[in-house]
Image 1 (tube, rainbow, N blue to C red):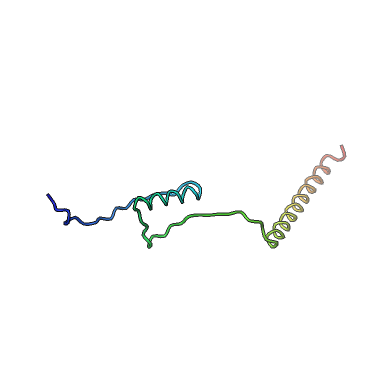
Image 2: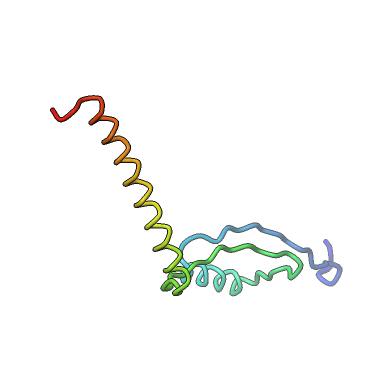
Length: 92
């Protein structure tokens, strides 16, 4: 039988996926930490986060300008279709 003092520490690696909302992720990370799991600092993890905010004045003005151009383009396209139909069918 091997003496306990002859045993060495071995590194066990498990791969986990973080799922759920941010509170669930924090809870899962805490559970892993409590179970003795550590993170290799040389291994980066990519997590996509987002939040909602009001658009800036610049973003608002840009969006309004684009919407105006799209509306004008669509109206011109419809006008052209109308003129073509009127020419084809007259004032029936």
